[in-house]
Amino acid sequence: MLRAIPFGWLLAFVAVPCLLLLAIAFSATAEGVPPFAWGRFSLEAWATLTEDSFYLEAFLRSLRVAFTTAALCLALAFPMALALARAPARWQPALVLAVLLPFWTGFLLRMAAWVGLLRDQGWLNGVLLGLGLVEEPLPMLYSTPAMLLGMVHAYLPFAVLPLYATLLRLDRGLEEAAADLGASAFTVFRTITLPLAAPGAAAAFLLVFIPAAGEYVVPEMLGPPEAQLVGRALWGAFFQDRDWPLACLLAVLLLAVLVLPIRLFQRLENRP
Image (tube, rainbow, N blue to C red; front, side, top):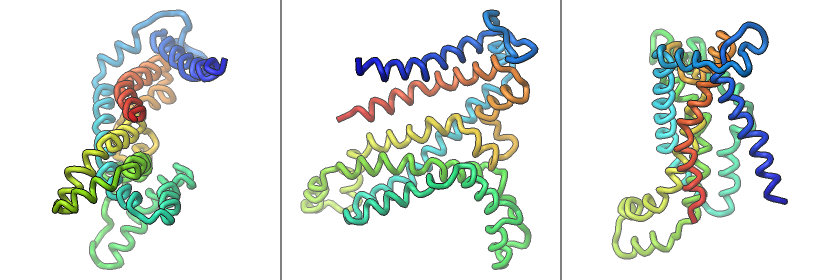
């Protein structure tokens, strides 16, 4: 009986919505509300997707941006997580709280703050102009670096926390034994710490990659106009073109692409 509750929850709020998306994706478009015809099977959305290279490019660009974001987050998160795990026990709760502190502010407000910092009349350009380092404002906003900066800022805690949990469980005795045998600090890190933390690093990478692949807000607020990721393409198909079958097909394909990394993350999480 107890197992029926979570299964019923997943069926109602995961399986049924996915089936509805799939049904709409293969329905014909129509005038009115909703802008599709129930029960009329059609491959219009699939034809649009295969004939227009814009959507394939958006998918590939989204995967590249998600991979780059996850790699940057992992590179920044590892030393942060290592410092957290090696900090005195009395300081660790406060340091973890500092990592989680950005979540206390709304996501849109944080991205809007970056817009204020990076725009031509923003604080960063004001400081550079005031110090005489530049003669005119640098075009930082609405660029790929600005988009990646916002993505890393948004998802960095998702990489720090699983790495911190993994490093906290490591047996420090192995590192101490290697050091007693004459291994340098770098050798201890390379041969013991890094291999043992690899599952946590992989989980951190996937935990960032999965949501970043479908990100819409950060590219819209900070990215360049040509950064048409799949999230922006899906939003345009749904709200601007009112092509709900195409939007649902994009959502289903994005979910299908992310099934493999989701399964990998689940397997890493279930490891003893």
